[in-house]
Length: 479
Image (cartoon, rainbow, N blue to C red; front, side, top):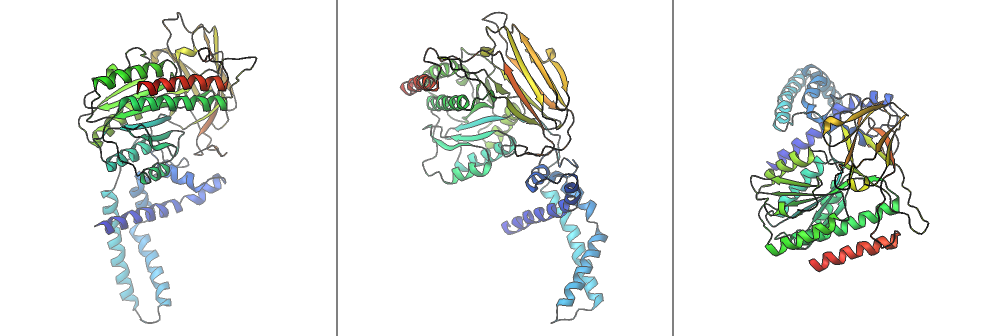
């Protein structure tokens, strides 16, 4: 049975190769810089190949029937049989017998193909936007290693980490050590899992997971300061706990650690997937800023958790962060570089500015520059979506969005949101950072955002390390 299944998978590849071979010469004429990896990425995506959206793996059967009819297959097979007969000197096969065998082979093949393709068919569906996030998964002891591998495989595909700027990591739910450190492709994820030899998690130690989140946020902040970044993916800690419930002592420690984290790192999301969410809903009772997600599951199975994560995480808008620079210190300023990003047609990228960076600022400018591969639609809003204002940004042009006195008071300040969508594409994105040719590139630059002070520790990299070190010591003491 396994040998038959492997043969079927090999044939899927052969069918796809035959289909793509009919299109690639024409596509290559349209764009000489087209790479085979781009074609395969598009073919196996929901959008399909940008030059012809009907060419996609989920449409494999219809495409095969279009190009390989019974008559064309019989004609090609007959020609091949006659060429083969000329090279066969040990046996003579009469033409009538050769034709009979060829017809029987073609009839069997024509019957086999629809059957095997229908058994493994996935319906095509419309393309949807996928959040770009640094995802960290921590599990309790309810799942075996194989269950976790299944979930990580699905999650990596759902977040498109091989095509987007997202990363995926796996945290040991008990020790807080990395099973898979942050990785940006599924091959690396499974290499780390296969090489992991320590005992698998047997329970969830929530304070340990939050302690690791503090260290991860510290390292990420230092890296962003070093690179002068002005935007980047949000971090999400996905705690999968189908069976475990933290003790009272652990909940108290977790609450204290969460308050420490929230006072310093504004854009870390926590998502909890469990059958009973009561304990998790009480961990963050002070900093309520849209960064907590509670995923109710109906069972402890991988399928149940996948359904919840797909609905409430993958299909939701988890925005990319736009943040201010670090505060000047001793005459040194920390200028930021503009952020380069891309968007596919029929999708959008969402950004958020946390209220911390808006407070006490008289005027904030968000500058969006189109890189020239298509037309953009850029929207901004505060609070409800109904308040959004949208502007078209033609190729090679720019648009500035101003926020004047964005916070009415220190106690009331809504985050600012922006979205970028591609209205048209020229199919010409060709430089190294382009994953796909129909992406449309753009740049975001901000000015006027509140700078990030380090609570009196000095606004140098050394001062930041000191301040982050204090947080880390606190986390270890509480742990």
